Image (tube, rainbow, N blue to C red):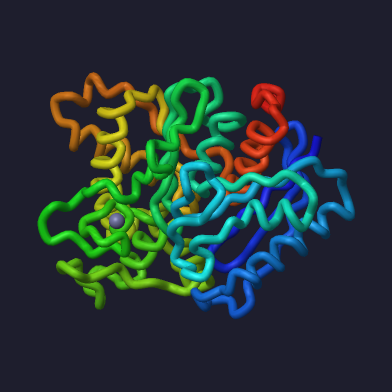
Length: 331
Ligand SMILES: [Zn+2]
C-alpha cells in the first residue's frame, strides 16, 4: 500500500510515497517566484500534480494525502483561511482527486504532524496526546480517544494563538495580540536572535518580530544552535524568553487535556536538548507550586522535516482506505 503524502510549505511543495509507515524518496518543487508570498492557486495545483505524476511513474499509489497550513472547513474539503489569499475557498483535495482519479484528503499541517507522531513517533500509544509545532508559525494538534480533535468549527489545537502576553502584546495577523506564535515560532526566535542583544528590534505594542528570508533564517538558526552549545549569553537569553512563553502554552494544554506526553516539533525542535531543557524549566517556574504534580513529559518530535508528508499520507490511509492506523505503525 502506497499513499502519496504532499506537504505544501511556504516556499515549496514536497511529496513522497508512504508504505507501511515508511517514507520513500521525496520529490520537491519550489513555487514560482520563491520568496514571494503570492502564489496563484493554479501554480500550486500544477506543482502538486506534477509531483504526484512523477511519483506515480515509480510506485503504485492508492490515495493522496495533502498537508496545508491555515484553517480548513470542518469537513476538510475547503481552505478557509491561508496567508495565500488566492487559495482561500479552494477545494484542493477535490481538485487533485478529480484530475488524478485517486481519492485525496486534506488536513491542516499541525494536525498532520500530530498524527504522524501519534501513529509512529513520540505519541505512539499515548492518549490523549498533544503536539506543539514551532515552525514558521506555532501550531499543533490534539488526539483524544484515538482520533484527531477537530473541534466544532475545525480549528482545534491552534496553540499558536493562546494568549501569553495580555498587556502590550505583539500584534498577530489573526487580529489579536500577545499570541504565542509571535514569541515562540521558529521565525520569531531566529528573528529576535538575529537582531542581537542591543539590536534594532524592540518588543513594543504593535510591533512584530523581524522576518528573515528562508536562507537567511537557516543561517541564523545554525548560529543560534552553536551559540547555545558554546554557552553564548544572548543565545541562552533568547531561548529562555521563548521558553517562558511556550511554558504558558504548555501549561494551558496540561490544564485542559492532561496528556502524559506533549511533543515539541517544527523547525525549532532542531535546537534539541537545550530548547527542551529550557521549556521544562520554564514550565516548572511558571506552574509554581503545582510543578511537583506536573508529570507531563516533553519530547522532541521524531518526524521533523517530513512530518507533513508522513502524517498526511497516514491520515489519507485512515480516512479514505478504511485502513486501521495500527497496521501502519512501524515496529
Ligand atoms: Zn494570533
